[in-house]
Length: 392
Image (cartoon, helix red, strand yellow):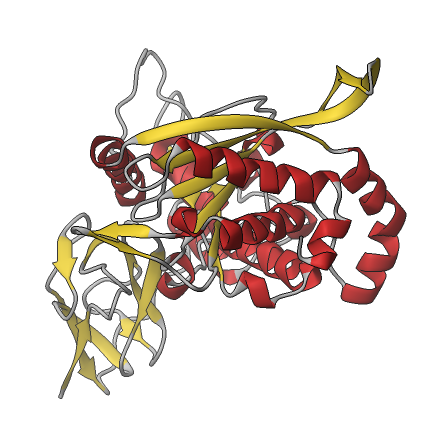
């Protein structure tokens, strides 16, 4: 009896994936629910598990092939005994003289099984040269995938080559296409304002230890901006709407996308029903999804359906930018670096921690009055956080 390995449902509006890796060869033994093939979509990398135990009988689709939902990837001879995968062996160099490459010393902070498997399957990779972004200095699967994708980290460079061509990942290709489509289809305009961060910084400094002790989560700034954005979206519903044909679809819920940079590219996990969640709940979800994004573990459901996006370029030092809308949304709020600047307050020049904020919006349904008012609402909420508590 043969067990079919099929492309699973890939999530909302996603019908195609690319095969990025087979973990097994024809004739290898497989255990039920063991990861057997890796697929990459425009949003996430996902593993397909073996439907039954046995032997991998045939592979129907190869690496880099595009496959549709429900397509046959391969078959398993159920119950058959396959060959156990050979353990990695020492590799001999061919030049300049035959030598044995010693196995790397164990890491001080060993990583998970996914990282160990990739390292074993790619003996040219030196984990000691790969930057680790995981907790406690551990390597994540994303770290290793990035190193193997051709950016040079951990892999010996080709001597004498002055340039290198590396095929864009499926995720990067789709990011490029969607950003260009956004510019081509939406009438994108950006308006700016600046926020005095004095009060929110003071509030954070006063309560961050108590907050973390009670809620077991760090008190950052993104949660404040998400709450401030929701507050403003309720006042200016056009910014939370989208265009569908010749109709405007107003959303009476607030699912906020939070842009997260990963080694594979930018992803935007969605925090659901932010109007019904506390600041602590929002901060906790942002932290959890950022870790999953970095490790390539976000599900399709976590990446779809947002009504508005908040992006923080300030974590990289950006002072000002014009963010691009994430279709089919109609607006995105860009945060930036907080920097001490001289400003005039009550006729006096004082030094204050200031942040530029930007709202990029679709001018087809959002006018200047709405966009400026939206940013003013965000500014008021951040400069006086008590307004968030009072719903003002």
